Every structure is written in C-alpha cells, then in structure tokens.
Length: 218
Image (cartoon, rainbow, N blue to C red; front, top):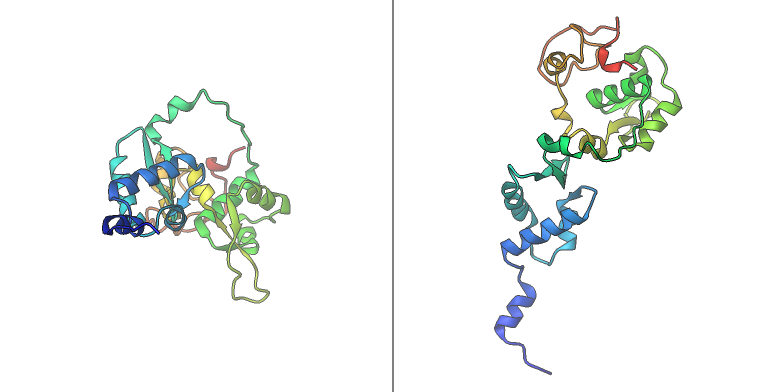
C-alpha cells in the first residue's frame, strides 16, 4: 500500500482555501435558476467549507456589478442588477394577467400573512373563490402556512420565496409602505380596504372599506 505523506493527508481532510470556496459558490449559483440556501450550498461543497463566510465575500465582490448575489428569504441567487433590467426588454415574456380578485387576494396575503381564507374574505368584503387561490398556488406565489390554533384549525396562507424573487424583495418587510405607494401613484389618498396597516411607513390611519385603489385596476 503506498504511503501517504503528511501534506497529502492534510489536503484530503482540510477545506479548500477561501478563494476557492468563493469560486465554488459562484459556479453553483450561476448554474442554478432557483435560489439556494446556505445548507443546500454546503451539501454541494467539500467538507469543512465555511459557506456563510464565503458568501459574505462573494456578495461584497458583486456589489455594483451588472449581476449581484441577492438574498431571497433564507436563500441566495445570482440576479441582474435592477437598474439594468431595461436591457432585457427584448426577451420574449409570457404575460399572465391576474384577475382583480387574485391581485387583491395576493396583496392581502402579502401584507397580513399568515392569514386565513375567512380573514381574506373579511378584509375584501366578498368571498374568495377556489379558482383565485388555486391560480396563486399554481404560480407558486403563495403556499399553505401553519394552521391557526382556533376552532376548526383553519389553514393559513403566506407568500413564497418565488413571490419575493419575482418582485425583487429580500423578505416581506421590504414591501412598499403607504407613502411609497402613494408617491408612485398606485394608491389614492386613503388606504384600500385596510390592506397595509401593519407594514411600511407606520402611518396610523383608520382602515377603510370604501372605494377601490388604483393598485387593483383591471
């Protein structure tokens, strides 16, 4: 049996240099269309790699570049810089227009999650059809959350990482607040059916079920 010297033994059981770990992370993120967690990255890399530390260096190196490493929930992905998105406008995009009911339901879930179907209907003032929920589930923008500890143990709905990724958000706390929506002309001077009292700019305004926001125009 051939002898293994000390240097060879060390190379077999020690993690590669940090620079090499960074290259590995770049390669995996580039090859994967879906965001990956640190645990998923670690499973692909040699034993002993400090994936969290390597990720810090990779993200820092990509700051200000044409692509950057975006954190989406607990996952990471290579994405085009937002200010360069206009360069992609010639790509063929399949447009799937959401119904007014689906947009309203999605907004309620995003701002009030975890939320039950009954709570969605209470906020909207009308019933939520199964087709509306199924459409959002099919798009993988919402998913089932934990059941509430209330009579009947109703299931709740929450937004997914796919929703955050599509809208360029790290987490639900990055959703625009009332001031941002109004300044962009997406909201009238009053909030629509109490959609956003808990997220955003902290404005203490009464909820209203009167009128409709331009955000939900067909």
